Amino acid sequence: MSESRKLVVVFPGRGYTCATGLLADGILRWKELGYEVLPLDFSAIPFARIDTFAEAFDRVEAAALAQLAGVDLVHCDDLVFFSKSMGTVAAARCAADLGLHPRMLPLTPLPETLDLTRPGDQVLGMAVGTNDRYIDWHRVRNFCRERGIPCLVCEGVGHSLADRNAPAVTEAIRRQVLALCRPL
Image 1: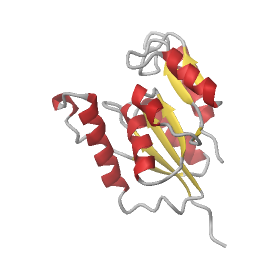
Image 2 (image 1 turned 90 degrees about the horizontal axis):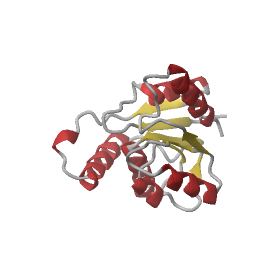
Image 3 (image 1 turned 90 degrees about the vertical axis):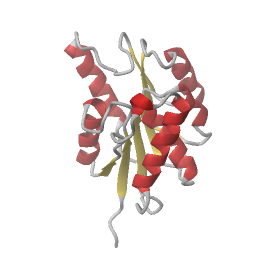
Image 4 (image 1 turned 135 degrees about the horizontal axis):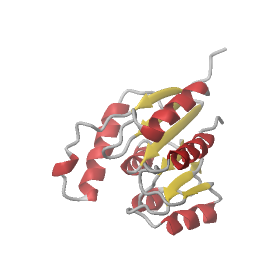
């Protein structure tokens, strides 16, 4: 009898790597839960020289698909796409491109993420700050409410989901996000 394969693919954001913040903590949590983790790397993308979000999305998607080439995603018993910011768009695009239906955990989704989330997608939850400059948190909350998706609205924080002046607030958010990392 073969062992089940549980894989989490981690899609970072612009200027937010898999080795920092909530993604790093999430990676540790997924590993504790017995998952293999594949962190993607977008550090070679020259974001400072990219003029539009559309171009950035295309570059991130291409980089993600290149890193996923040759990875057997189809035969996973549980496949999770864990993502942050621009990575949430790449995760949704890659799932569609590859014809996959992974469980998704998008942190700080962008408007395009909501547009790309397909009916029937298994979304573990979404997290957004009330001061996020890229998306109105009400839109995320309403989107989640309409689809029965758990929504973590983080009061008083922005896109980073952290408060540098209040470590206790940041720690509380971290604990709530890690609670969304759950096995099938």
